[in-house]
Image (tube, rainbow, N blue to C red; front, top):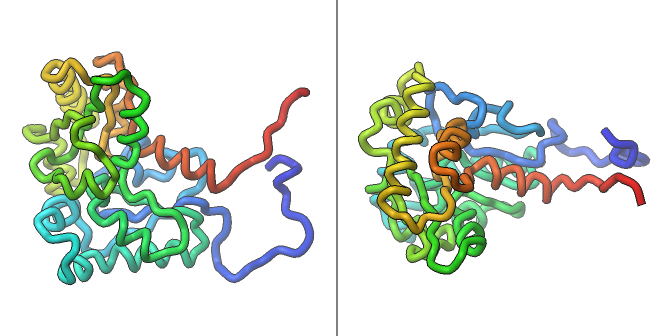
Length: 258
């Protein structure tokens, strides 16, 4: 720790754990999460605090909640374990909270209202920023876990203009389906990498206006380098958003020569 960061004088307590800037609300799942996945703590060069949301399987989070009215009392009840988890992480001292599923954009506003720290529920929040980076007329290519269930409500929750994106889902990818939806406890890494690259390449071939790619699903960043090698485009994912917010919440003084 740089000398300027060493605590001095009287220190405030009040919690059990210290040094966590980012709390991550995790979907339930016993499938492998290799480095690069948001559920693997070694993905990040800083500590993160994970909290598994009871009952929040991938199928429930992506498909069941997508079929509900986000303004209904039933929806508020269904996401209760998520808002409870956000409060838990905030109480533990986390300075910002995210999730492990881009489809949580559907309840971004509910999570934000539940706590007094910043919440960035979905990788889709990067989309408006990426779109602004691109030449007019170019699109952000969004590779999503489930193209059939990514709705206008999800996009609205993340502030995404549907006219700035082209989307493609991981439908038809057996290894992705086996792990993400069926909770298979083993992973053929090379196969899922091939599937992810193949989907991204199909998107670019189908829509040549794509100028950058966003991997919506937090299980796909392990394959981002391979996607970039195949498409030769900038590739963004959940890990960029987590790192950016962490660095904003845990600033360090600059050092160097004047």
